[in-house]
Length: 410
Image (cartoon, rainbow, N blue to C red; front, side, top):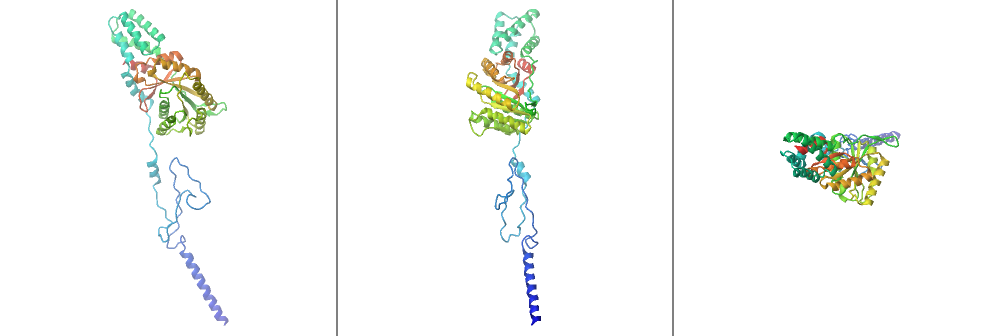
């Protein structure tokens, strides 16, 4: 009886061991028919998007990659599809434009300015006559005044031309051109420092701050466009730039600046609502530039009429607030060259409010009023630093006194 019971016990134990071993052996992921276990692959998120942090929860969205369990009986269970992540990123990433360098754009813009050199052509036509009558001298003076050279510079130029004409007598065209070039160059003043201040500065806290440039001007001068073009020019010089959209009153201004920045990979700091405090946006732009280690921060401000005291006071506030965040390196006044003497009056008011350090003349290729270069510099003692000669993205170039005069007389 005892022997029979022992045998039955051993047989039952063997059956239990056999059943348990079979279950373990056939469990998925343990070497059974479903194949070996494969660890999941974490996909790299597209550029510009942050990864979602993993959580302890369950279900879709709790990890870096959402995966669903394969249906029962699927022989490919545990094996994830291979995705060409690099190829997808390359296809999705926008292609950044390569801005034209300052040197090459100057060559192209010089010829464009020469085609609009009505002032130089008119002067040469009169001075090349055999004998200059009093009517000819009056025509010369009228030509200079129409070109907005200004009354004082015109008097200087006329006096010098009369003196040289009496001394030398009739001159051949080449001699006339040389004399006129010398006189115009003196009036444009090549000795003025036209470099753009882009060196980092130490703030009151002793820390380095990016160079900060304020763009100011009236409506319609192309100020926002000029800010975008200036960013392109600095990117071409391998500078890290941040744009600040402090024109919060014109709905399209921030979008326009955003487009300029995206084309060359420049970040834009802007408000999420219209009518926000422009001084606060400007301050945030400078703070962002400092945090990102940028070289230059360009702040676009709202256009305003020079005879509106409230708007001009607000511009002064923007300049003061920005100055607390970082020393202001440049205040560039954008003037439309076609406005002539009206642009000069604008410059005077802006200079009183924010201390203009440089002039940007736009639309210089579409006017015979190139004499505004001479007038505005003479009146303010501030150099023209950049000129716009077209609507293309790289139609902004540093101003060169010699190139300007040569283009007028070519």
